[in-house]
Length: 338
Image (cartoon, rainbow, N blue to C red; front, top):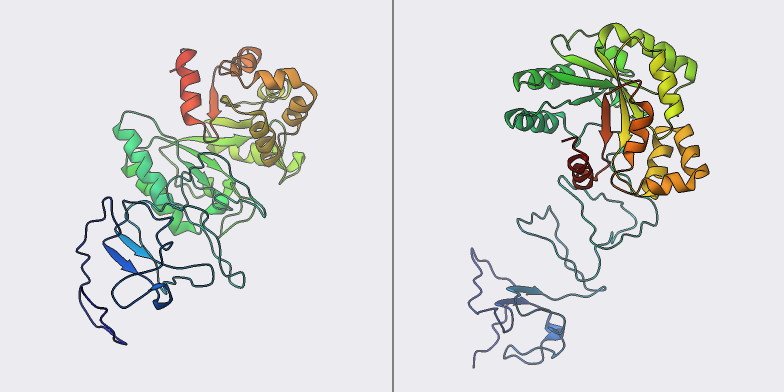
């Protein structure tokens, strides 16, 4: 029987696990001397109690006996946690960065707060190059993408030039120029500043409209900003709304075509959350005071209720999916909109 080889240090180029991990113990095991029961490779009987039969590498540990990596750890496959993934050092806070999708299959409990894309409103990620690249893919697939240019999320003029240039090179024909996040990360404080650069010549330009106001600016300042931006714009895209009255009133005052923002089929809790975020005061009150109508919005065809009440004023709509792309697409197909 092979005996333990004991030494303080080992320098080696390779460590090769020679055993088979299918239906037996892991091919390669790293565990502390306290878990070893002899010098013949034996270990405590319960050490592998929670380890599956398909494990190739096993590293033992416990809450008081952690495995620590001093640098970055790159995983080419999937991270699977039997219990939890937690921040272990309360003295130094860290971040969880997800460049793709964060999927929760059952439920998620947030104790302090969950912030997604905080003050970096460039979609679908935080880098304008990613947005331009996605727009290129859409153009090549025959679509007409409309990248967002959020002023307060663009660092400086050079970054704006790069973003605009990439979109033009990729065949993008439209741009939605908006203010974006409440706090600027660079030199731009308003969408008007972006428009005044003259870089958007050649684009069909959309600007933001707020029939129900905005939590970040007074109604009078909002109206002035709209008038200042109109000479640069081809159309207006509104915040998403549920109440038809302010929409029809807003459209009647505009000299540009208005694309009305509506939601796809969403849960009532999601509607209330997003109404608070965008400052849709009347729509929020509409949800709370018309419980039956609000609950009706859960059905896939219900956005038609709002569409039918405003289609006399406009036939242009901008759908906010809020992550429910698949459900929204089903609704569009079912209602012959796509």
